[in-house]
Amino acid sequence: MKRIAVLTSGGDAPGMNAAVRAVTRGGLARGWEVYAIRNGYQGLLDNVFEQMLARNVGGIIQSGGTVLGSARCPEFAKPAGRAKALSNLRARNIDALVVIGGNGSQSGSASLAAEGFPVVGVPSTIDNDLYGNDVSIGCDTAINITLEAIDRLRTTASSHQRAFAVETMGRNCGYIALMSGIAGGAEVIALPEHELKPADVAGRLRAAYQRGKTHALAVIAEGAKCGVKELMEYYGAHRKDIGFDLRVTRLGHVVRGGIPTAADRVLATRLGAAAVETLAQGRHGVLVGIVKGDTAVTPLAEIAGKMRPADASLLELARVMAI
Ligand code: F6P
Image 1 (tube, rainbow, N blue to C red):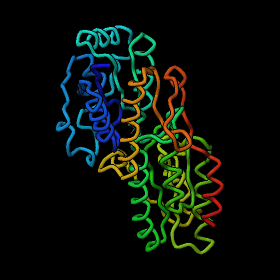
Image 2 (image 1 turned 60 degrees about the vertical axis):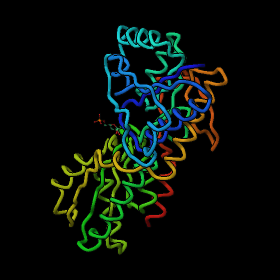
Image 3 (image 1 turned 135 degrees about the vertical axis):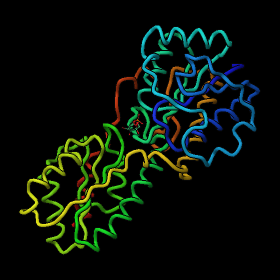
Image 4 (image 1 turned 180 degrees about the vertical axis):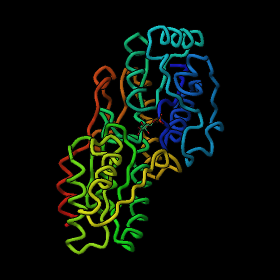
């Protein structure tokens, strides 16, 4: 291995920069040349490469987002797009590519690997929905941002005897909602992995007041079937029977922003370095992840098109804790 390239792709995630730094410095430490590609797969198609030295990744471990830029790139999903990407990589004599990104990005890695190019994936998505990996870069920060919002909303909920619903991101995975809901002591958590109806959510919020609570808070995952829209419609139609108001906060992209937590920085550093180590061992076509606390590799062909759901069995724990 002499020359590697690295890119960040898909939705940005706090900790991506720490991963870029780890790949860059890990590669340089082995005497390799490291090239950054700007704006994800789009930059690969546009042939935007930049050589990275140790100082180029100085002072970025603590910054959110990605200094390399990111993009969603539908063109790369087509065979013609990938052919262009491969020809750009080969023209620069790049020996291997490290892709830091989430589910869609690693499906892209799997396609490149299937077409014969050495690729290693590093899981980075706030959604934490990658198969073959227990914890993705960015999800700890996203959980903590959601938790801060829950804690803040609880104080005003208690003062006004209102019910609150907080919607957090996560696409089709309820991991952020589940973890922040448990940590924040939510009365109800609605996930894509477990069906709940608006009447169930309203009933459980009302029951919390009837049990003498001064607040009642629901955490709603972005992908839940009972979303905030359905919940607001239900409250609008049944306001008189319910007896109290509902206020809704949609956190949206706030959940993805800001500085990465220590856990995300350490995880990103471990996984970035492990990606380089994997390439040094002559292995590629894999995702480098964390499985049961240790770094582990899973073939990209095995993870493509699959998803890791949140563990809905923890909802029972959340329910008991909210009595
Ligand atoms: O995959 C990360 C994520 O933030 C999801 O949680 C969310 O559904 C999606 O990206 C939003 O995508 P975009 O930033 O393209 O609107």
